[in-house]
Length: 140
Image 1 (cartoon, rainbow, N blue to C red):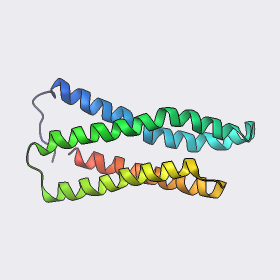
Image 2: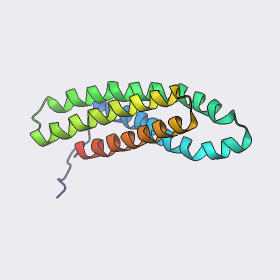
Image 3: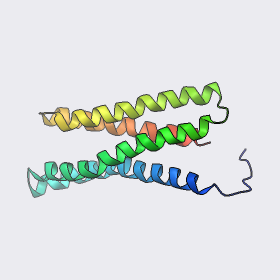
């Protein structure tokens, strides 16, 4: 059952959550958009996917680090009160997913074969989607 909300969040909460959601939109949504663009880009030029990936990297990596920073800020804001053991367990799994997403995305940028690039990109996207879903659950 959802609780009734009687007040708006304070301005720092709006900023913190707004930055976090915007960064997640860029990081996670951007990966999904890139997955859809790559096949069309290949038809334009064999080099087009790499150019798109480089451009996306200039936007996505700052978003990833903003997610880390605002995630720590979120954790500090939430753990100032009490959190259950279940909440902390989900939070730890989310942290693992966030780190995995970053590692696999980085490995994608360093891969030398198309198969490895695809595998790392897919795994990074799945880890990112898992982190997103867990974050929604943690938001209560």
